[in-house]
Length: 202
Image (cartoon, rainbow, N blue to C red; front, side, top):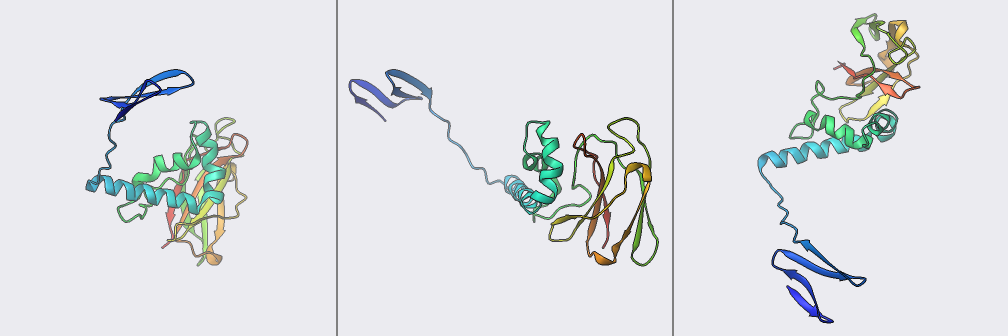
């Protein structure tokens, strides 16, 4: 409803709002009513998005800040927003991730080429890949990164000193109880990651 104050018309007049400030008159459109749809699809999407943001909160220091923030800055985003944009679809209506669709990292660094695993003992896993280095970005010096994740969806980076040119890394699994392993290459100079690969340990 509009009112007259100091001989000036102020407030809502039909589809517009009239206001005055510092001797000037401003007219703006009345905001349209914001709806809050609660269709099954919308509710499901909100559950998925909430699950993705909770995953981010659990893994800010170990994963999001060091490995997602650099890539996000190239796209004028935060690491949290980029992760949710690329991973919300990977969570189901119960907030649980489909590991086959979960991207633990993203980036355009050369992928882990022809990854294979060998069981070299009761607790020994050997990772084997082809050295596909080709330039200063996807180089022989790219670091091989390895993360473990349990069903609580908390990730932990494992000690690893392998690089792309080594073409192998041996992990003694007896001190770990992870449900899943993820690996990727990392270029520390350029702050670039390759897309992650996953391994089911259950």
